[in-house]
Image (cartoon, rainbow, N blue to C red; front, side):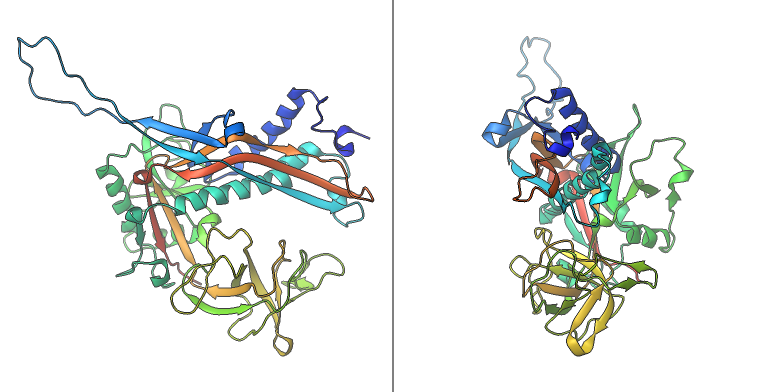
Length: 428
């Protein structure tokens, strides 16, 4: 039996080089698959593992005095330097994959491929986790740098699905950043020019392409001159656009239909036995539905959010939409409704536990577009994300656990380097 199967992977006797190797596999997965984390400034301070606090600071540029000098003057007052800083209170983050020896999925790692697991499911879990933390930090920008699409909208709950992203918003955001003398995001290509980057959703990119008078350039039209960012798709008005579904905030707007779970759910519950006439979904014996208080207003094909009833927003119209700070939320497509029994079945099983009374919500989908002239969020690291393979410590010695852990935080630092535009999106 190998070390990782006996749980000795991170024992004190294991050479540090091997620990570093698996850590680098995780970080390589983050580098190649993450969308939002690369746009954050990284501040590593491993001494902060003990203090829990990182001080991130920067020095302002000088302000030159351009008046002419006297020929008799021998001393200059000099250009003054000053600074600003922020305290980053580090947080523990991590996740674990757990399966019994007798689970149908245990063969996923029965061949002992811990390297493949770091690159695969565990690595993807970390990428998704950290990208969401980064997204939430971008969304926390001061309202002075946040704008709503449409006419007269001042709040996320004012947005209608028809308040599409106008291509002119992108050019306006670029002008705002240039007027604030924000330097721009450095090209991935060494020695490349700096540019404004927008991270947004595939739907917003579609709406820009198809907007009236659009001057959209596909990435293939200029890719020979620059090296593209991860998921970069095109350019319009001097802004390079990157797409990710992370920035589609399902049902975050004005609530249309909302009900609650009649009973608590367990992981693996809720998926229909057959989805799209093709997939057999979920594990044998799992409950293929959730029971809600009232299915009225819900419809097959809709994307709904299952989320906490104690950590949510208030749209001012009687609805409680999900918010970025609720880590319990999951988005699912409804594939079947048993109206007589208030049972709803989804396209995928629930992968988190939900309490009785938690909300099932259908509302306006909000698309977030982040226009960046430089790193506005700091990724503070006191301990890098790294993997663990803890030993089996349950009474029967049959629960396999694969985990990652980090001591870190994403925090807004330079809000003036960012503009966030919130919009609806076309439907078809």
